[in-house]
Image (cartoon, rainbow, N blue to C red):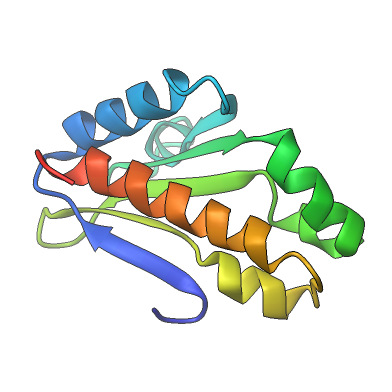
Length: 134
């Protein structure tokens, strides 16, 4: 973990990784996709180039609301976001905020169980997106 980030390398190419991640989130009845942002496409719209980079923002109000009630500034980092990107070597990765980092960053108190649940869910979702087995 670097700077409160969790980064994992995918076994799949960019499109497959993103598609798998999106499908996993979309098929989870507890999660709702809020926004998808294609940074590469946006760069292209102004004649700039960027390696494939997309963010998916999603949430579960039952988990996020207690965190924001504990610390209003937590809403800067919620709902959850995962960025999928291709590095300079052509490898695909995904990165998300470590929930434990959010606890210290926003001085969230008394929500350890919620943060542990969020951490476990993010780990499970991302592992499923980047590999054939969990």
